Length: 180
Image (cartoon, rainbow, N blue to C red; front, top):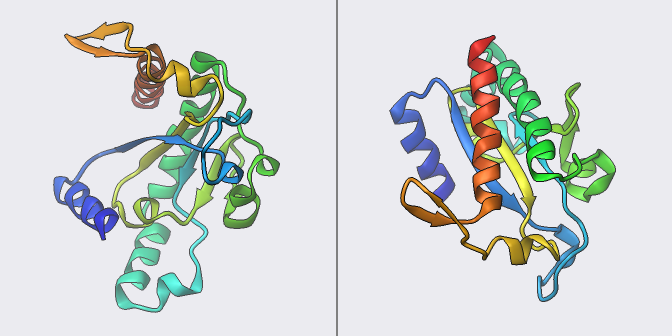
């Protein structure tokens, strides 16, 4: 419900581009009581629609919108700019399909390295090109400690370097996307 509401608010704004910044976790590290040695960056774009998603008229309309607009192509373009930025800025490898079972079982790789079509609610319902960046694994043995160090002051807000580098990656990708 909350994600559908978020999509509704985004769509009411009628954005030219939607930016979703997310910190991931190692799916196999359940119940997250200890840190993981895994750490990857990636991005998701709309796609991998399942039969359940088109059983309703709303689902059919969403599928038609994705087929009839440039939202998927534009989402891949900006995501293909983001992933290398995240990898470079954060010094984290780009996820391959074999790095997580959800990538091999619930996603479809795009021609862009580290960019995957995934049937997430926001990917499916947001009506604009989007960049859904998975910056890092917050349960990584190094990241979980780095993410609590608030050593940076940006515009009067005390934060940490990993958040700043993630934001800088998005800024660089968006700047490149709009300069083309």
